[in-house]
Length: 568
Ligand SMILES: Cc1cc2nc3c(=O)[nH]c(=O)nc-3n(C[C@H](O)[C@H](O)[C@H](O)COP(=O)(O)OP(=O)(O)OC[C@H]3O[C@@H](n4cnc5c(N)ncnc54)[C@H](O)[C@@H]3O)c2cc1C
Image (cartoon, rainbow, N blue to C red; front, side, top):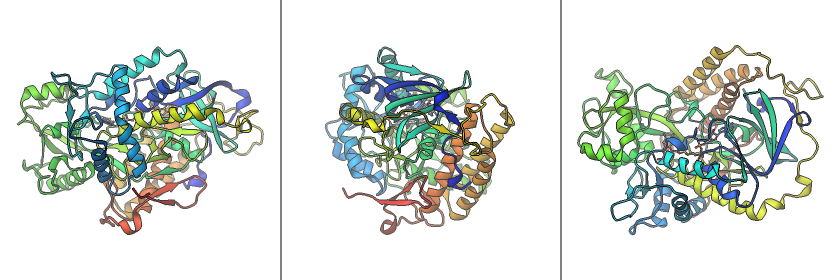
């Protein structure tokens, strides 16, 4: 389906006929980005926070390794800056990275004050771990369940804040726009199959990533790219979407989503071995197993293909070997990983663990400035759904929790002074209507109870087809031929799917996944070079002369827009 055929809204509506709710700030998402924004903004404004599952159903919950911050005496924001810039392979925005590393410590101190319990040594000092791409140890962690420790603390705090209205299990369908300004959101309440309008002076979108478009991913089921798709439909610019990070070491037990085995385990000394037992990263990169994720993932793909070709192994995996690390260290430092491996029949201290790369993180997203402002006035964006420019072509490990913390704090600081600057003429009054069928001039509220789709089986079939296409042609290595095929197949699928008026969340998610898939393919086709996580088999070299620029897509542009990386 060509971009111009993507409907502006996923359903027809008339705001006159719908229940409405108002607050100063509307926050979409309850991960680290959404909850940080809610806690900070509630000091000055009334807040409504919407989330499509329960508060804890987020990618944040599953984060293991931790949060990167320069804390030790030998470290500094400058070194963190350099490592981040290096990992991003020339595509990081220097100003945004400076903001990230300089404001990291304040954000961490806030978390500690809220009660987050990072691991400490006997002398009380925070313990710091090492991960890929970092030149020294700078990862704060809580065992191997850092995300859930942070999220539980934030959730506990949020629940006691009187100024925050929380709505769980509601699905944001679309961002409402009026006079080219984002004024709220159109929300589907699955329980009653009802549409509700939430108006606000500022909308903070913190809806996470899109890993679920891949067959093999570490991302939880909520990561269906809704935020990117709704912002694109509303006319906001999206950027750098060709850069999808594949995490090298997901446990290959065929479960979905895949269980991640944190890089911190390789930081602790674990090796990667091929089917003959050889450490294959030695000689490929000076950091061997701790090389940047894109390099490790690509080498793994090569090794897996070689091993399959020589007939020694049938599976799509290599081995992670932690057997030389003392059992008590493994059990103490990585209890959740030991437990989860055991559930799948592996003993981390005795067995080689089958691992393979899995889609893990989207570096691109909705383009924002260093105050979190999207190109669409009234819309602020934070967390994985945003493209701040800090990750460039490849995210440095443990920079994403930090990004959500730092940029949500900045948005709230900005709103404190600016939210009332919304001009009277921009405040939404009257009604907004949209007719999806485009046949009728007057507006009908959709009959959301009408069963016009083929049911659960069809939905699963569409999702499986989409995931197969994306995994086959838009994986660790891509080329023009495959991307063109993917585009044609996704377009065909979209033509069919967008004919259906869904009345359930999974149908809307499928539509969002198709839009995001198409945006990723278009961006990957446009970038005719290899850089960071985007590797083109037909353009294997990095081309700084022509490609040190971002690819930006916007609904009303027929061709991509390009933006040069700013000078440091
Ligand atoms: C297994 C795993 C391990 C990781 N480990 C680390 C790590 O160690 N360190 C690190 O820095 N990063 C790590 N990451 C990445 C990091 O966890 C995420 O990038 C980060 O948590 C994203 O936070 P977020 O707030 O942007 O989104 P999320 O935490 O994903 O939250 C998104 C929220 O948006 C809501 N939402 C989405 N769509 C809608 C909709 N249509 N309507 C209503 N609500 C909606 C969801 O329900 C959810 O509440 C890891 C990721 C995974 C998957």
